[in-house]
Length: 287
Image (cartoon, rainbow, N blue to C red; front, side, top):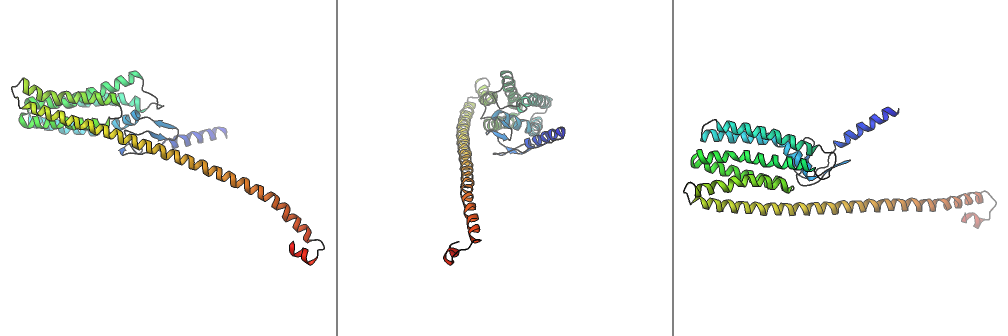
């Protein structure tokens, strides 16, 4: 019996871990959850970096598929072996990224990341961003005007993605933004200074304005997230207080019911005993 009960308990615990309470809209295997709020799983709490790690691992096929499209576009604009080499490098980088972030997502507690894990994940984010945006460099040099525009839009998209998805972990955000920004600002600056195209400096100005808007968007996102978390904390506190009030009320009613019922039993019993004796008419009416 003891072994059966222990096995049943373990089975119930493993089943309960799968019941996840989610609060935002990033899809995982078990539920929908966010890269910016704490995920509660009955006996386990996932920190923000663990939620982001799960989300990043989940989105890896999407990133690889997008890289395939970008590689085909790069090959169409400037046919050579380099878009194929670039796509292979992206796939290898995504494999290393999955290994690095798996350690974060599988951690058993929500405490701070070990230093080695933090360094590995930050380096993985930065290197993958460098490899991803390298296609922009190829198109800037070999793809003509259409390739330059496509390359800048590609890097702008990468900047937007990492700014919104990694905003809760500063080290990861700075690593990715720094890598993308190197191409985003460096390519038009290179065209202006080395290729004798001073008009490209206007592209640098536009890129700076774009990045300034991203900074504002990240700050607003963080402020909204903090407000949501504060509201959620207040709601949990109010629910806890309501549960305490309900428990106190139940205890009070149970105590009062007991205190009233005990003397009433004695009164009723006394009345029943009196009713069995000779009583005058007025006494019988009172009983």
